[in-house]
Image 1: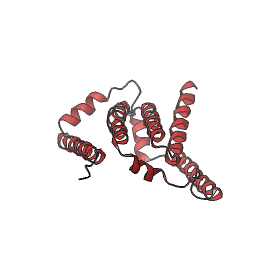
Image 2: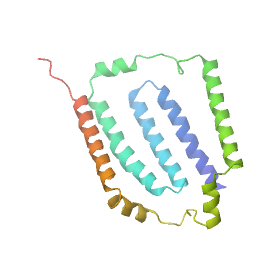
Image 3: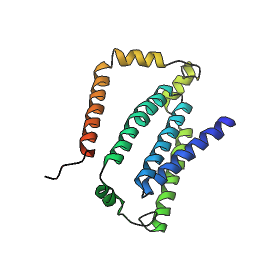
Image 4: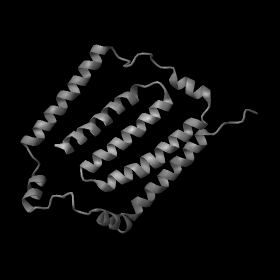
Length: 181
């Protein structure tokens, strides 16, 4: 019961912060809300028994990408920020009734998907439960993932690290101030 309450609290925190994030006008507050969303998502990954993904979420996205965005925000010039802030003054830019209808449609679609999932369980899940090969909370899969990353998937792992480095260099280049000569 307590686990369900904590799960729904993190889910509400992630969804609520994400909704505020896409509608907020202040860039500094949006970065803080992105921080909250990423941490809440890491907590939800822990509930899904994806501990490696949760740790990676915190190290890469919170520790790397978000800090990079904060530095880019701090180093950017004021004119660029003013242009980004000049958007609609309304909380939701479409009329309220259209936004409400769209949200209700997505909620109905989500309820239908959950009901369809429970009534027609995929065969691979039924087979895994019959064999007893479902991942349990006490299972340790980090060692197996680390072994796969450093042997079988070493090339994609290194390519991703190069892409992250290129993104860091590009963000640093974009955020630096130009000399007007």
